[in-house]
Image (cartoon, rainbow, N blue to C red; front, side, top):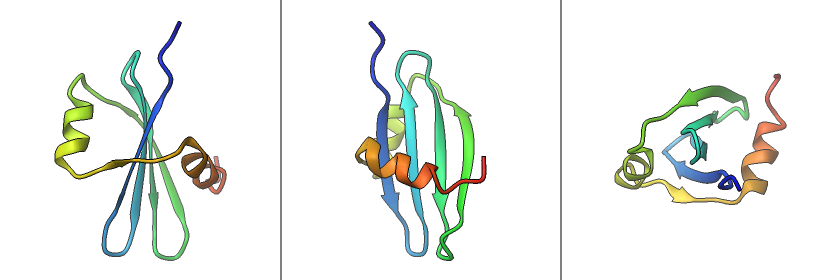
Length: 76
């Protein structure tokens, strides 16, 4: 059985970053939510140290619902 994706969030001064990581193959998606509400989506390939990197960069876990609500705002 595959592992479920994990979701992370960090709020900066004027924007927010949400990250989805698939732990099986370290693929994922990064969403940048700009102050004007625009959502920028980038497909990513991470390395095995992504979870340590996110912790060092002070990302917190977030819910899949929050991530997917923001993802729905993209134009893709």
